[in-house]
Length: 432
Image 1: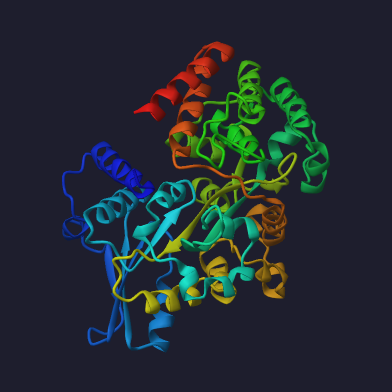
Image 2 (image 1 turned 90 degrees about the vertical axis):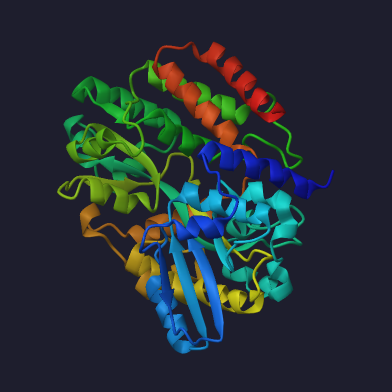
């Protein structure tokens, strides 16, 4: 069976799980609420491009491009990340309804690599000529294993650091300046020692929930759930099990809270100082601000033992596009270093183009909310530490089971038994 057939099963499964009965993303567009699609440019433009996104704000840059290229108009569709990927799956499967350009998120992109024939190889349009503009590990995520097929051009990324509450550290009698905290928590063993002190002196947990600290440790590993042949390796490779057991131990020591990601309680915890740290990516900077606008105590330190990456997307051109050359020309411009700098300054989207890190207007970006820290440098240093790690088509399924296992430990499950159950659950998923 051809490898491209694997996508068909995933398409059907994704649509079924989403409860979607429509087979055409065109029909879904017609049902989209007003305002989901915005046309930028003239109705008389020679080339009309459709552009599917989930949250990234490129509207001002699209307007700039269309002003300079009046022969092009661009229809921007913005919907939720889950609906976006389901719609794209459906359109590719149906053979119609796909856009000229579509973003694919980092945790999803390997699913699409089994459907290589559904996308244009951007190397055919000269992508290798711009490869050096991007961090190596970011470019590699958007490539085939042999590097000959380029699925997409990188957008923003999510290098990780340790957000922390200086008031909680001070209450615990600990150093609280960022440079001091960097020295205090160089290793995860150091982190647990600080957690013990915080709990003893303040009664507060060290971190918001099991998932964020597990993500931080997992993303530092040289390999995760699958090897490049698609084989499950977590029962033979030590890294994921070690991270799971370490986080389980912290749960049992009461160092970890149960403020679930994106819940109202999580946002309130940020505002109230209910937890001392939050390991997170560059985009978490604005999430904290939005949830705790009046807080004055959040600061940023380096991640113990090195940074990882949480987030980012690649802009692809589905084979259904009738204007692939024009689409590539636009994406090449949109995601060039100059425009990535604008996206960071205007919308906080952290650049995947290291050339930007050397620009004076980037290096001097500070944030008063975080005590005037040089946020640009903090996350640039983190981005330069990250290395590419293969995820695999079923990364999301495997990761979901491990995270659920951690919450089971939080509810009292034995970690060793839970680990065996996780392996069984993942293997059942893979055999379906």
